[in-house]
Length: 79
Image 1 (cartoon, rainbow, N blue to C red):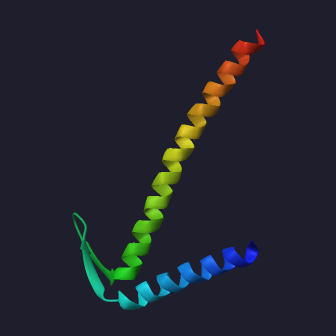
Image 2 (cartoon, rainbow, N blue to C red):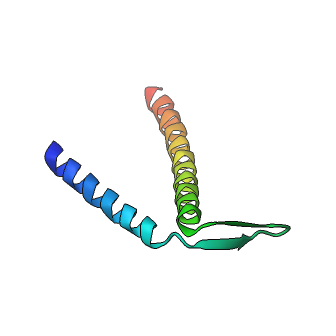
C-alpha cells in the first residue's frame, strides 16, 4: 500500500513539475490600485493555496456547527 501511495505521489509531483516548467512566463496581475508582475506558476500556486484555505475555513465552520448541534442533542437526550 505504501508503495502505491509513493508511486501516486511521484506521478502527481512529476506532472506538477512539468506543468510549472512549461508555464514559467511572466504575467501582470492588476489589483485595484496597483499591479504586480510574477511568474504564472507562482500565481497559480497562490490561487491554489487560497482555494484550499477558503475550503478549509468553510469546512471548519460547518464542522463547528455540527459539533455544536451534536452537543445540544446529547444534552437533550441525557434529560
